[in-house]
Image (cartoon, rainbow, N blue to C red; front, top):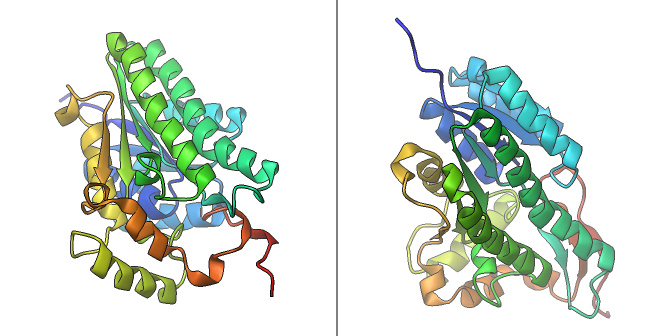
Length: 292
């Protein structure tokens, strides 16, 4: 009896947070997944978690810096060679990026933020589309944006601007690629309990306390909540959906996310300038601190 091969996805930033939750959700839905992440140690742990759930044969990992075109191209090529096809790319990799007053942010930190979060999405789209075009069967692209890209005051300047670029790129490429049956959509998470936003148990509790009083929905967002929407957009049930950005934020966009984000910036961080490298394994760099 002939069996249909599983659908295949590349997930960037797959080793933690939303990326890991998306990987596990797609695997549970019967996909094969190529995990691409800069953090090799987290990648090994993610593969182990997938294997523990019985998905060892449906996963592979590659170290990938999404700001580097050769890395992204190699990840897409590996997915096709390992699993025989590509049906979806989830452009999820991100970092906290540059922070601080606009007059104090270093140009190099601004450029780094855009390299990971805007250029990385562009490169993911570019090389996934090449694979889709070669196969001639269409495909799906899901970009992870943020509520910070939907309005002012919902995140640091560089992060917000980069996520707004992701939303715009989602719309423009959706129009361009629709004739080839390639769908392009995005999700815009609000504050979610991931290592990018809450690295310590104290910080997790801080977030829970804040969200209980400022977020319309009573429960904090989880990576699995975002992963469920990504899985929908990646799959055939979203076959007539393209060019959309879906907020997954517990109603924060409706309420005004700036109110929430203002309280999520810990008072100890105010007045600092630097750059956050997220869960890449690189430490946060602080260039300037407030006067004593």
